[in-house]
Amino acid sequence: MKLKSFQALQSSFANPASWLVEYFGGSKSKSGVSVNSSTTLGLPAVYYAVNKLAGHIATMPIDVFTEDDDGNKKYIKNSPVNRLLNDRPNDIMTAYQLKELMMVHALITGNGRAYIERNANGAPIGLIPLLPDRCKSMMVQGKKYHIVTRDDNVWGDFFAGLPVENGGWWKVPDRDAVHIMSLSYNGVWGLHLMDIARDVFGLGIAGQDGAAKSMANSGSPGLLLEAPRGTFRTQKEANEFLEAFNDKHEGIQKAGKTGLLRDGMKAITVPVSAQDAQFLEQRQFQREEVALLF
Image (cartoon, rainbow, N blue to C red; front, side, top):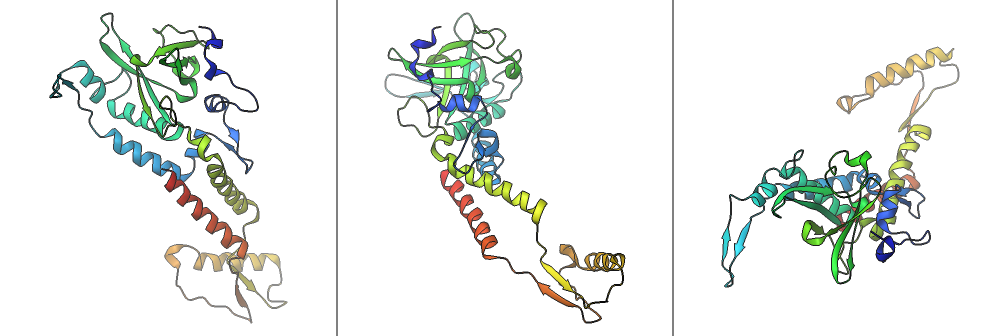
C-alpha cells in the first residue's frame, strides 16, 4: 500500500493528526501538561463518566434480524452473528468486554472499531478490536476504509493470521469493520475528544497534580498551638506534646471531642485562603465541564 494515496495519513509538525499524537503519547495543553487518553482517564470525573456510559451500554443485547422488501423484521437468535455480538466475539473476550472497550474508544477518541474476521465463505467468525491510535478512517476513491497499523508489542498473536506486517499498514474495507462514531462533522470519523477539549482536561490534570504537590511539599495545618515562652524546655517535650494532642484529636472518629490546653496555651485556627478557595472552586467547575462534555 502506498501511503501517498491516503492524504489523511499525512501529518505535519505544526498540525499533527490526533491519531499520530496519541501514538506518540499525546501533546501538551495550554496549561503545560501532556494530555492523552491515559492521562485523561486519570481524572476521576472522566473515569466515572466513561465507566458508567460504557458499562451500561455493554450490558445491552444487540438484536440480529432480517428485513424483507416490505420492511417486516424477523429476529434471528441462532446465528453466528448473534453469537459474536452477544456471546463470544473472539477467543479472549466476552461480548460485554468488547462492547465496553469499543464504547471507551468511542467516548475518548471518537471512534470504536472492530475488524470482522471471515471464513473462506465470507461468513463472520470473529470480531477483533482495533486500537484507535493505530487506526484511521477515511474516504478513498468514493469508498470508506480503515487504515490499520500492526504493533506486536500490543497485539501479540491477535493479528497473526491477518495480511499486515508488524509496523506496516493495512487497508480494511468498511464492510469488514464495525465502526461506532461519536460526534462527527463529516460522517466518516468521529471527533477525538482531545481535539475538542484538550485544554479542559489539561486544566483538570494540572489542578490534580498541583494539589498533590502542594500536599507533599507545602501543606498547611488547619490548627496552630501557641505556647508561652518556656512552656517546653526541650524540643523532645514539644514533640511529645504534639504527638499526644494529635493522637487525641486526629481522625474522623474523634471529631467533636473536647480539647484541653494548659499553661496559657492558645489554639489558632488557620482559615482557608482566598487563593485556596478559588483553587477548590476551579476544580469543582472543571468537574462540571467534564460532565457537560459527556
